[in-house]
Length: 68
Image (cartoon, rainbow, N blue to C red; front, side, top):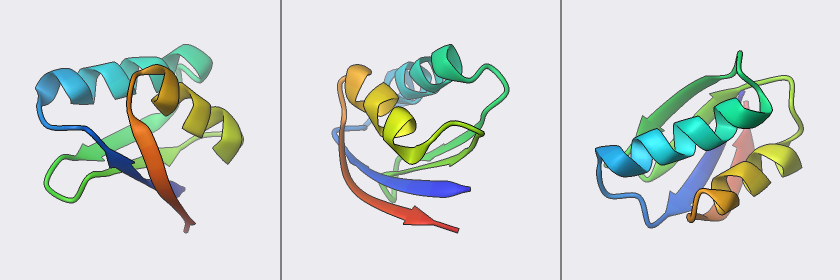
């Protein structure tokens, strides 16, 4: 499980965009977005770099990563 700190998310559209982008590279990924904290928690077999790139491609900026 990896927690990404993401800038720029503010609404349910943001949640959907990030979730959709991650599911494009891993349809089985578990994605939890917390708008209040500005975090995206992902359980996936993909690398952190691939997940970060997916979030970036959705139009948001990853400013921190913490693996759990």
